[in-house]
Length: 280
Image 1: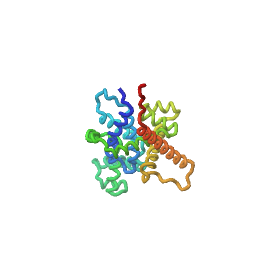
Image 2: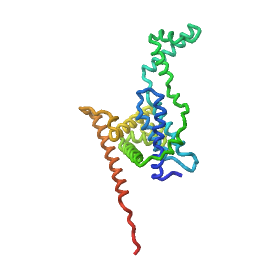
Image 3: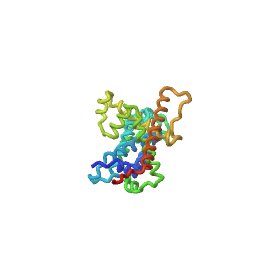
Image 4: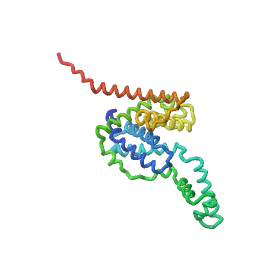
């Protein structure tokens, strides 16, 4: 049985720390140019999705259920990124080819100095190339320490609850203000769990295009939230904004306006006392 919206929101607030935990676990295993905010956005949407689809009657603790969804979303986000640069991939391939050739020529595994000489690099750079080659997304599937119980048991204090409510309000507003095609992709993937192939057919685009739209949507959500809540992390606006920049700024403003309107409605609802009719 699905939970009421209030109960879903409470679950999201109580377990938001799971997103930070899993992002921290993943961010240590990928190159430094992978943005933490991008993984956090994917994880946050997965948490919302988990709360919307959670069925307590199944007997599975929400923390465990949500952790699986959050971690899966972060992995999907990483797999959708081309986070290994072209140069990194080329060096990794060359390293593999040289290792194979030298092994055949020498009749044994080549030493690091032999490989480095064959590649025309120093031994330290060779180690760096080897490390990059080994840091594959599939390695992220290894189990991590399960801290879901201790994390989710810590209920947010009033100040933390305000911060969480604000971020959720902006996230919801950001999804609502996305362009129609991007909103359809986000809702389809994160909230309706529809297959990418089905979304692609409905929108008349390729599956790779769906991946691009998903990345674009998450980037817009991240930038809109940072612009409103973490200005130091927000993208720097151009001094002479073009059409694309003006559209981005209009989107940020629309998100802020919608989030503010939602907050105002909440305040009014809380402040307005219920009307009690008296029996005549």
